[in-house]
Image (cartoon, rainbow, N blue to C red):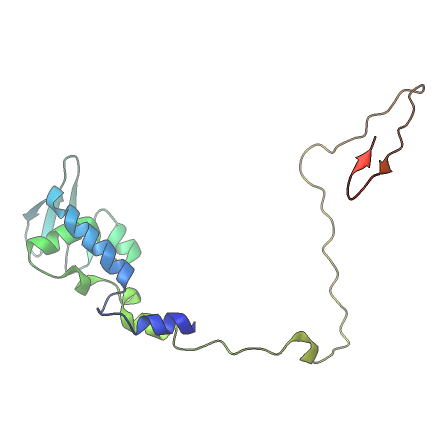
Length: 162
């Protein structure tokens, strides 16, 4: 917790570094998309096979990734490049520096060892009951009446002599 809180102080931008890296990689791929403006800030983004509708004000894309993750998808990043807007402004608050600092603001207080814990008269927990494993159980082969049973002698550590 301490190291993550310390790491958050080194963030230079508003968005966390990994999310920034994802957005930078998507910016490089935006040249593969054709952006066609529509009405009321609705854009159509086309690739070779597919076309998706991106609504900037609603922060949605028919691809669905933006709504699920909170990070603009590659189609939205292509639209932001077309209209000269910064995609980092449309990243969810969960991926911003302030939220990262809030998450790691509190440290974990150390506990005393178990010898310092108060003693109780409660019943000690029992181990779980053995469960029958799935599958056919193994059965020892029944030997014939004239066969001798071999006696195994232990030789060394963990070995048996047959």
